[in-house]
Image (tube, rainbow, N blue to C red):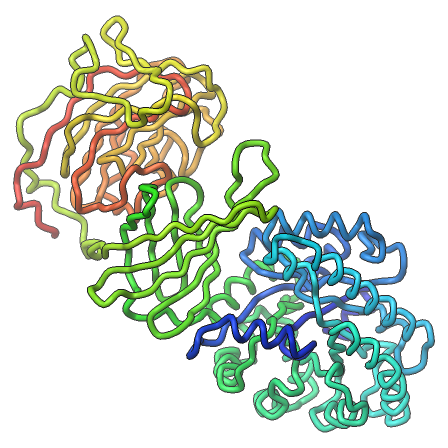
Length: 622
């Protein structure tokens, strides 16, 4: 914490770590990891660092920025969402369940105004916070969802000593602090709470306090910026104090972004790897003058994820087409610094992940809602390992947040060849004879993809029409999608469509890549606008027409590169498409697939559907 900023912002902090608070919790966490597990770093942020203490806003911010935890403020009674009150604990607990972001730790930053070294009121506040954390743990023990229970039962309490609470260079205040900690430590031990001291003291002074108190419940909260500012050798101190003394760490640089300051966090990461640190890493400050803290923290979150990312096993690198036992199509991409996966629909990440050993990882997808309007979510986790014959093998586990159901779906994966280094030379492509996919009279050559859904497809006045009552933009509906009986490799597709205002549909190339079907003024713009390959490639301009007018697509797919001409304007020019789009019915780009039309969205009309197959093998790259 930055003692200079403290008075200006009246901030309050808290903290957490699971390594030193009690033996039972530590053993359960460590035993859950297989032998040879790699270090795993959980990233969070202080709620005061994003100027949203004692509210749910900090959890939502953390979710948006792929952080796993919030260091939550504990202030004087009645401040904001005060966790002394049951209704506020319930609110935060529900926010954690919905966002997936846990309470990393608690912080009593009010001690910067009410010094623990000299104030009975401060000592009483510490007692109240310990008791509140004990209540959170007791309430968590009643939850059926054990993952949620772990996220709402913080075990580390940050005790800061800055501003009015500063004890550095004042031996009498250090000794007074030891006296108070000796009174507080037994209560903390009783409830499995770690008291973590963050101050301007050096390693020697910290050791003196902790050894004098003589309790495993008293530890150091190490702040990289404050110690560096005092001139201490932070690399030597972290290594020397180790996990016996350090329970949690603030990642911070004074007056600079995390990856642009004078602290070598890659070196710190190397030291933490060697000492076996498994606690939380909490972003605080690291904000240049003139930049708002939310912008700075968002940048720092990206930097920290890169610096402290686990090491992806080399054998797993690349893209994979997954075959789930329940026949749900899925796609997985593993790079050196991130995991992306999409089972059928929804976002593809990136998702937080953990390296388990030299050939396997574990990662967690976002919660999946059971059905629209339901409060039941399924937390999705997948464990992936390298199989001896070159396949991926793993299990996708879905657990309901109310504990009512856990479903395990085994899967295997086949490697997808790397994307060609250069775009294909379209001047060398040769096409076969044009094929008419729609005869204007009936559905010959087409069939519904789902046998258990309503078929809204028909032919009227020479038009292929999908009729449904659905009018919203939600992902799926009760009506069936339509596909060609035949499957195709690379091709050129020409098709006319008519979509109403604020309606939504799509055309899938080989059942994998969705060309968005919406009107010019649709609210689904950008990577979801007309002319886009949904969520993958944005059009260079909006060449669409208003709802209710006929539009035309002329789309070429060659070597996983797509060219899109919308209403006579080229809006995508021979661009690579990385991975299938949401709603794909298969995920192997090397396999042929059908032309697939969305029918579970809104009503739409088609005409003049022609396909030119590519017959030449001479479409070599430049």
